[in-house]
Amino acid sequence: MHLTVVGTGYVGLVSAVCFAELGHTVAGVDIDERKVRTLQSGTPTIYEPGLEEVLRRTIASGLLSFTTDITEVLPKTSVVFSAVATPPNEDYTADLRAVFTVAETVARHADHDLVFVNKSTVPVGTGQDCEQRIAAILAERGAQLRVPVVSNPEFLREGSAIKDTMNPDRIIVGINGDDWATELMDDIYQPLVRTGKPLVHMSRESAELVKYASNAFLANKISFVNMLARFCDVTGANIRDVAHGMGLDGRIGSRFLHAGIGYGGSCFPKDVKALIAMSRHFNVPLPLVDATHDINQSQRMYFFQKLLNALPEGSTVGVWGLTFKPKTDDMREAPSLDLIHMLLKGNHKVQVYDPIAMDNAREILPQEVMFASSPLEAARGADALILLTEWDVFRGIGMQDIKAAMRGTALFDGRNVYDPDEAKKAGLEYYGVGIGSRD
Ligand SMILES: NC(=O)c1ccc[n+]([C@@H]2O[C@H](COP(=O)([O-])OP(=O)(O)OC[C@H]3O[C@@H](n4cnc5c(N)ncnc54)[C@H](O)[C@@H]3O)[C@@H](O)[C@H]2O)c1
Image (cartoon, rainbow, N blue to C red; front, side):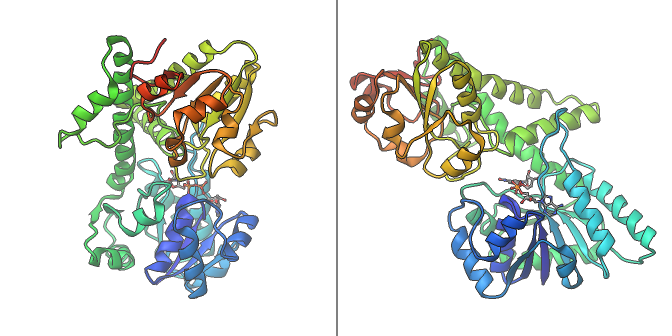
């Protein structure tokens, strides 16, 4: 089937590549000319394990192409997937301007029946809004076309996006009573359904909410364990043991039960905020979601404050890890950004290292930041070292080597990856989250 994916960011690019890998003919459309040119040459614009290989293969097979001009590809397209960004507004609502622009552009240029699919994360009711906007433009044009709107939220995780897309836990398809759209969506995903991946049909509103509900639930687990970590800090319990003991209960599960500096990235913070905005809009309180957000907001500061309190004026601080999680180059809402700005404001010197995101970081961090060429170079001469992202490369570095590189002794482990006893044995002062850290 001929598909168009509009927006070739983290979700759109991976979706386009994977649809082509499943045998569809796919056009990726983006307004960013530089991005499109880079993708046309077979070079990925984001870091994602396995992406480059599939990108090159599907371009070479003729199934995948990229353009900035949607009108070139629309005439052949059966289904348009919109995968543009939906960032948070100041008031926590989702900024839907890009989604509406895509829907309206499709309505303006469609010359045959086609299906419009929202793959972006959009608030409940956005599908209906898109449908009305499309209908208004078609009526204005006097075009008797059928353009049903479908919700097909995306659940991939950065860092394992290709694997997640080819092996999804579930495919959610929300359609309000259109058999033709249902048939096309089933055909698109048939190669995955044939190998046992569940495709679940539901109403468009339910599909829109599944995405927010899933992310808010996972974020809630993280905030829950972080809340307990602070309790551990004063009671003498160890959150690692507590979470391990909890996670072994099959009803609870061990995933998303790691205490640290809270969640970041482009999805959890924004989706939790958008659900809070929806609860205000519909005037239905969602207190667990409010608490999830509040705990996360204060968690970062709770840990960073310990570091700031421990630093004399003009200290040098090594920062390990800049991305919001390992195996991605995404810096959106990464805790490192907040911390680095606070350190610089306090007149401290900052030396950073990240195995993948140094180029992205150079574009957004102030010039005073020193970009090291290795983890130990970032630690060299530092009064304090803080681990913010649990990249594997940091796990393997010995405590003695860290101690030898540093001038001071304070090791702040924002992800609880190190053994406090080993750190102490090496002569380091260890600060973790909820595992016997000092105030
Ligand atoms: N990143 C994730 O891990 C993830 C996972 C699941 C769902 N989502 C959701 O998917 C959506 C996209 O997220 P993302 O991280 O891929 O965003 P992104 O910012 O990486 O990509 C968006 C792309 O859309 C392009 N774009 C913007 N307006 C356009 C227009 N009018 N026409 C064509 N292209 C346009 C931008 O140039 C950019 O390349 C969001 O709603 C997000 O919440 C993201």
